[in-house]
Structure formats: C-alpha cells, structure tokens
Image (tube, rainbow, N blue to C red):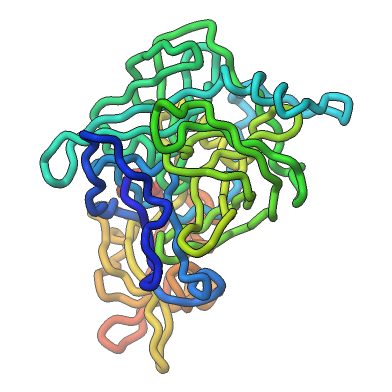
Length: 393
C-alpha cells in the first residue's frame, strides 16, 4: 500500500525499508465512490499539511484504498443476534496490568497476508493485522488491508497459517470481514468506544513493518475523540479515536485496547511527516454493526442516488457538481445528468458535495427527496427515491 504524503516540504520519513525481494509500492488507483469531495486545502488538516497515511501500508502495489465518507451511526437490526464477544459490565476491579492486557488480547490477534497483481502487472505482496471476531473463524480487519487481494492468508498466535476468503468489505468505513476454516479460536472481547474519554490508557497490538515483528505492543493514551473528522485529501469523514500509541506499517486492522483488555478501536490511520503521535482508530461502536451486516449479507446497505461529484464553488454559484451518473440509478431515472449542479435538496440549500452527502446519509433507502439543480443556466427540479448505494458501485 502506498503512503499518502501531501506535504511538499516533507518526505515519507516513516516509510519502512522494504525487505529484500519485496516489490516497491506503486501508485494507487481510485475506486469509484458515491460522492467524491473536492480536494481543497482548508481547515486544520491543511494547516498541518495533511500528511494522512493509511497505516496498514501493505507493501505491495495492489492493495488500493479509496476510503469514503461515512457519518452515519449504524445500529444492529433487532432481529440479528450479535456474533461477537461483548461485555459492558466491567468495573475498576477488572482493570488489568499491561502484561495481563497483552496476554489476554494477543491470542485474538492475527497477521493478515495478501497477494495480488499490481498495476505494473507483477505479483505484489503485503500484510496487515486482524482481530478474531468469532471462535468459528470470522476475522475483522480494515478494508484497505484486503481490497484488491487475490489471495489472503492468516497466521494466528500459535503460528498456524490458514487460507482466508473475503466475506465482505466496506470502503466507506474501512471495515472488512474475512473467514478462515477453523474452530476453537479465541475471539477478542469488545468494549464500548462510547465510554472512552481523553486520558484513557490504551495499548495497540499489531504487525508493524515485518511479519517477524508480529504481536508488537505499544502503549499510550486517548488524545481525543473526534466526531466527523474530515481528511479531504483522502476523501472521507469518520468518527475516530485519536491516540498517541505508536502505530506503523502493518498495524492497520489491529486492535486498540482499553485497560480491561477489550477492543475499543481498530487502528486505521496516522498523520506523519513532521508530526508525531497522531494515530487514529475506528470507533468500535460503529464497526461492530457494520461487521454484522458484512457477515449476514456481504455488504453494508446505505442510502444513495448513484452519482459521483465534487463541490462547485464560484462567487456566483455554489453547489454539488454532478460528475458521473450510474446506469439505472435513482439519479439517472430522475433525469440527472453529468454537469448538473445541485443547489437544493428538499428544503435545505446545498453549497457543497459534503452537505448533499450528509443529508442523503441521514435518510433511509426508499425515502423520496426533491432536488433542485442548475442545467444550462436554468433551474430545474426532480424527485427521486433513494436506493441502496452498493447497487451503484
């Protein structure tokens, strides 16, 4: 996986030296998205030169990540019994020492190795980290760890290696579930990220840099909880746990653990370059319901209209510019065309692609909405019914 470095004055200082024989990372190719925010330099992240990095950092050319926005909190359907090991009744008396935490969690951590064909047509290989989700072989990891892989294998705490298959992957949330044929595994215990506060002690466990360094543990504290944190140069927005435990290449998909030895986050991103101790983990409260959907249906259902676009911003007009329209999508059926500029959705004025996406994500599949748009300097309106976003990707 290539590093993303958007700072002209810094180098990829945290790029590991690849072991002999490993292919060098190649330039990543984009994956189609529902809505692609305009890449513009604004806000805190551009002031920090937004050196945002995917930290699985698969050292192969094929592991391509184009993570997309996801601001919705998904709930597990009442009819579905959660598959994972969850506990919410811990007290101060249940706190563990760092040694006890590592001993408890490590048997539930695996190294995820992947192979595939890179853009140069050559075979490429890389690895990340995973978390045992159930004792029957379901494993949780990041989508960008396995996206594009033609072969996936898993090595567990006892050194046993299994062939794995992809159950489902959701790039919006950078969440994936893979499956190995095994029983009697040790599933991780999951806690609640909603109970996490700044200053909490945390430990990260993963496989940084090289598979010989599997089960590396680092410690730190929760720096902050970030809601709707936007990485414009990566094109996504997520609720994240910011922490200062060291995470490096290969840590992606690995656990961020609390003092009870419970997984409360999935390490996914870091900011690097001239900045230090800026790691981010997906909040487990968001990840678990998504993982359940992936296990049950192989995909995550979200409302969508079937367009890609960017923010249109001029002194005289602001809106969401329609760049592409997916065939047979609600947008096409409603008559939207590339080049249209959406300026209103329902009663809400739309001045950016992010505003349109946030509004649509707050709705449900099957809901109807009236869109007002500009075409050929004329104002038009159309009504459409939201469909399942995964049908148009």
